Image (cartoon, rainbow, N blue to C red):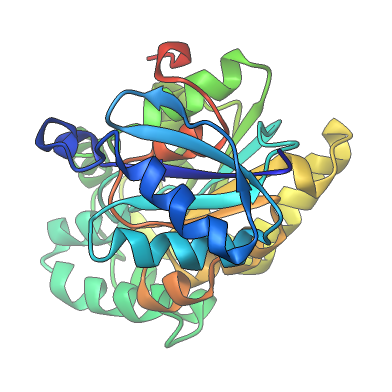
Length: 301
């Protein structure tokens, strides 16, 4: 079969039977009148993720039909060509993607400015204001903040559920895993080591050895820099863009999501969810492994 559609349930909902064994048959019945030929379902994780191969229909058409069958059920789905599903390069945003928080917002809390900074972050991530301008503005507000605030922020930073499995599983199968963040190398280096990334790329937060100077090194690592990093890594690794998967949640991720072979908007801001070809709205980051055809038994933790 030339195409495959993958249905994915949130791990927390598996026990409730939200992805029943009867659902693949219902989906196959819905595809048949549209001219599709469907193969037997293949469970990647019982009750959590299932592949349904099909021919005779474009992935976008199959996805539309599947969403009608699902109704309002909190399930994610990915419809795509079956060939080349397993990618050789992962490039991932950090804040609210690989970690659960926005590290700059949390850092600002130690200056008593979390709400003000978080509002600028929200507008920037939804594409309402220029990213570079917003970053410089937020960093300037933190001038004089002692470096101990960075350590305190890091102590409270948590990986997103599924992040370790995603990175370590892909790395174990030979993929280069890169963290590309509009945040700061102070955090990306630590997150990369914790989660198992091969490389990390971000902004440099400047300090005088005791406190933040309120400046960030130029040039800003922004939307264009994320895309450039994706293309540069492909060139260095000898990979076509089709062999890449990118994941993020903010407007500064849109360019790399659009260029990657599989671009995934993960629990994304509205402007990103509306634009991305693939969305994960309910499941955790392990959904990206299921989308690539990995079975749960292959996951590394």
